[in-house]
Amino acid sequence: MYNEKLFLTPQEIYNKEFKIDAEGYRPKEVDQFLDMVIRDYTEFTNIIKKLQIENRELTSDNNKLKTECRRLRAIIDTAQDGGPSKPSFNNVDLLKRISNLEKAVYGKEE
Image (cartoon, rainbow, N blue to C red; front, top):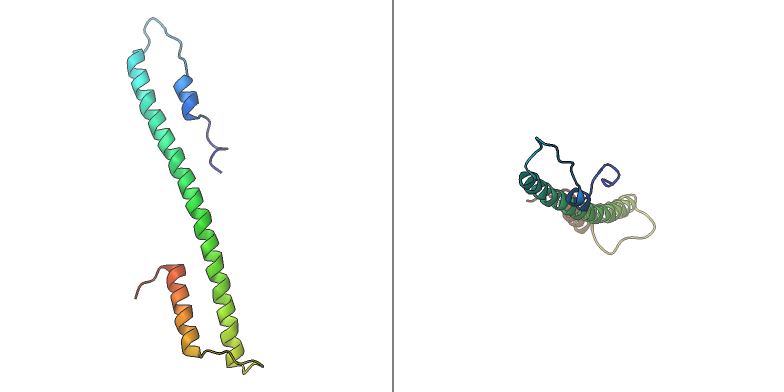
């Protein structure tokens, strides 16, 4: 996702060679600065990978919870309509379960 937008890898930064002119920069200072850039760049890459994994997991959990909410609402609608089969639990149980699912999905605390 982000890799298409990045121009350099930490290794490419490390391997970069600069031409030296008579009045150029101090190579030691440039190397120290580039070492800091490489550390930051590597850390940003690790953070991005971690967040992408976390995002996939949370999206998957969210989809499962949404499916469960839809299923429970369908059961409630069927029970309220006096559908052909009566569920083995009452509306209070269903409402408690929906409440718990909404807390999990939206992170609401009582």
